Structures are given as structure tokens and as C-alpha cells.
Image (tube, rainbow, N blue to C red; front, side, top):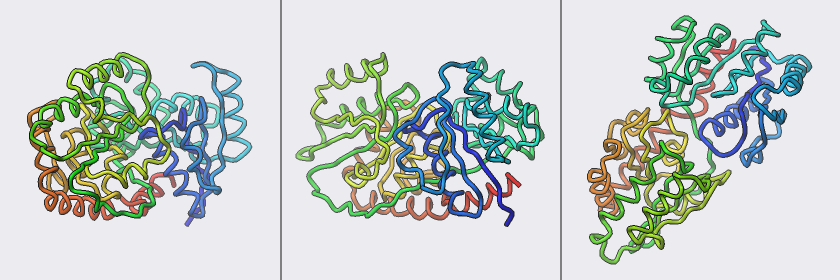
Length: 358
């Protein structure tokens, strides 16, 4: 197969869905006959420690939105390393687009991870204008594909829905004590992730748990902002401070996934969350809101449980069922693992991806 020199471009490597995918793709390509590069435009991050030795890593250290020196460093790097494909994730496409102007032979791919694109018209105008420079667009769900084909200035056959894939090495053993249940929510603390739904739902079922001890691990970055403050207030309002544990940002969630009994997604919108695929690899029963591609991943409820977004009653009832019926939980967890391995594997992604870049 033809060898390519492919650069992943991302703002930073702090743990997040787009950031994980940039690392996953760079690592995957490094294990082929392609030459793999990864550049962060703004700063390093915890995910950098998971980059394989075969990936050449470059930190641009851009200080401001319009940073001429940073742009010149990247342009020089692209020429020096004879980069043929620049794969820009999310908002890094703007720097990628300007690089394309100065090196027209470069194949420019935009990878759109933003699940709420169709409702964010103010931010979308720049993407639409820049799309005249795109050679390919990768999207992470069907709604993004529809939006891109309707609005972006390139042919429909250049826009492709390509499924995310997870990368975790896990030794699974979930046979823990039956009198305690550990729930994990792997998501940065910010508005669309709607951690408040989980707090409200647990407050609804606390009195029905009997002797079962509940422990909830919120694994993800947080700041002392209004979202965080309102979440803490809600936890304290329901006297759940002993139940909820804010872990913060982690580069590798494996140890928390292995300890968990149930995993959740409570978002009001999503793309295709890598965390959901990681739940599957970890063989966890999953309750998710019906957003983005979550329904597809969970086989429309056959490989997990789906509830309407922001529906506290439905979420709490489903959570109580999953806690109470371990056999059903285990069965659906196994179905999800099989589905993730079959439909969302790295090899499947690689085959489709290489067709895009040649």
C-alpha cells in the first residue's frame, strides 16, 4: 500500500473526545507503513504520555488566535517533513486552512467532532467559508453528515461519516461485592454533559436501594465555574456528598472503568462519544440518553438502555432496574462489548480512513 506522511492537528492533548481520537489515529497510523505526526497548536496535555514512539510529536505553543510566529513554525514544519495530509480536528482547521493556502498540494481533512453543530449557526459561518479549502470532511454522526452536506462548499461524496474507535488494554473482572454499586460517568464537567441529571436521578432512588451502598465517580476535568458550582450545590441539596466523587481529569480511565459496575452518559447532545465505546470494551452495562450516535452504538436499546434526554423519571427508573437486575445488566454489557469490537474497531476505521487520504 502507498505510504503517506500524515499530520494530526489538534488544539491540545487534555483528555477529551476529539483529543483522544487524534492520539488514537496517530498511534494507529504509526503501526502501518505510513509516517505519523501529531501537532498541538496551543499546549501539551496529559494524553501526550499515551503517544507511541512511532509518532513524531510537535508542540506549536500558539499564544493567541492570530499568532504569526506559530503559523510560520507550522508551515516550516509541514515543508520540512514533507507532510502530504493534514488532518485537522475541530477548530484547528482554521490554522490548517491557512497552511493549505501556502501549500496547495496538501490534502486537508477536517474532522468535525461537535455534536451540536446544526444549532450553532453563529460559529458555523467560518467553517462554511473555510470549507472551500477542504479536500475531505469526516463527521462523527449522521446529523453532522446531513448538516455538512447541506452547508459546506464541497461535493457530498467528499463528506464521510466515520465511526470513532476506542483504544484501551483492560483485564476485566467485574465480580465485586453485591452490596455495593459503583457508577462511572466519564465526561468533562460542562453544560452539554448534564451531570445534574445523574444527581437528580440518584436522589429519586436513594430510598429504594435498601442496604446497597452507592458510589458515583465523575471522571473528567472541571473548573470553578457556574456549571461546577451548580452541580456541587445540587449534590449538597440532596445530601449526596458521600456518594459523589469528583476525580478530575485523567489521561487513562482504565482503573476507574475496571472498578465500575455501571456506566452512564447523561448528555443533552453528543457526536459519537469515545467514552461510550470505552464502556463497551470495559464490559459495563450502560445507560445513555438518546443523543448523537449513542442509540446506534447501543443497538437501539438491545446492548444497553436508552432514555430521553433530561427525563429524570425515566433515567432513575432505568438506573434502579440496572442496579437490581445483575443478570440483565451483564447480558447487555456483553452484547455491547461484542458490538464495539465488531462495528467500532481500529482495523475497520483504518481501512475506511486510508481510502479517504489517498
